[in-house]
Length: 112
Length: 114
Image (tube, rainbow over all chains, first blue to last red; front, side):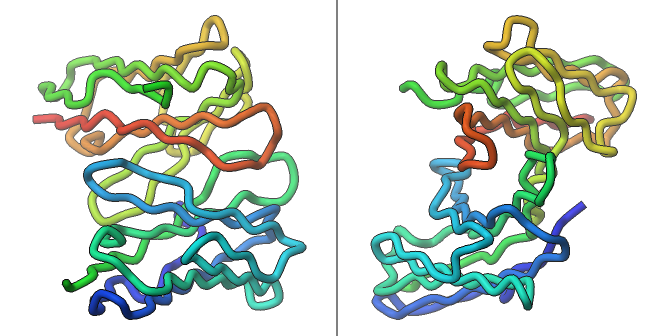
């Protein structure tokens, strides 16, 4: 079953603009991860944020986590055509379980 | 390429046939995962190995599905008596010994049951 939902389901912006995607989840987590998927490279890990962290940066990526609201956001700044892909948030639950639970994803299209 | 590799990349089978997929994880990773992804959905967790031990199985893993990792290296996922609903992308991932870290995914095996 899917843990949560990404919002929006689809997003189309102009190259150079910023893209923001949101993710909500249902249960307590150990960490939350964002992945990118395109037809050429499969699923690629982008960034991991632990439950005791509130914000994390990696290059043009900024992730926030609000455990009280069970939500996260992914910001991609200065978007490029190569950022066109589907973006998924995935959670690792607290406790002993170790498998990732993914949302349905946001399909991002960067218009040149 | 020393990433996660899956074989075959594509498989077309008739309903009722058995199929087997193989996954070779990154060599130093002792955790190996199988996921299934259908069109327009995120991947769904199926099962997880730590070395050769199968530690978690999803409710999605019906009796027709079996996974093995006999020597703690490569893994196989077998689907018996395939059904059209089994058509999906089957993804394998591996991660290092430290728990709850990022996973490295293979390109997947796309199964079509006709």
